[in-house]
Image (cartoon, rainbow, N blue to C red; front, top):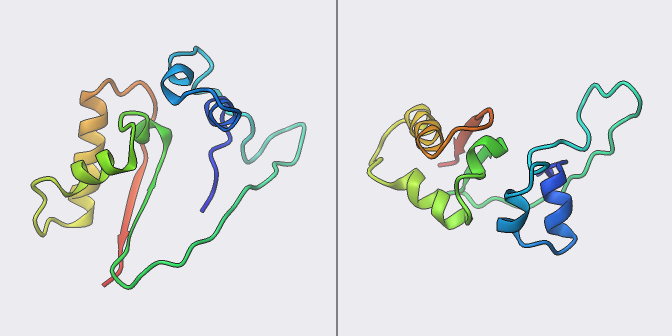
Length: 114
């Protein structure tokens, strides 16, 4: 797992409520990225063990900014999907983010173990 290197994430970790941080003009400013000219990035990672029936969602803030809680994102992911292919679910999530405003780039990838 990685951590978002953004102004928003730094503010939330420092105690600013998420909704307040999201309203700031700096909310989507990145604090570091791969390929920085002046400094090597500091990589923040964590680990967790996935169960045999886990779902793994990799996405940019262009998606998760429109879902205040992970449970809300999960609800939309599962909503009316039945046995839909993962690619269709990804497209649906991008459509939902665009319908909610789509102010940032939106990247989504899904993996489901079975």
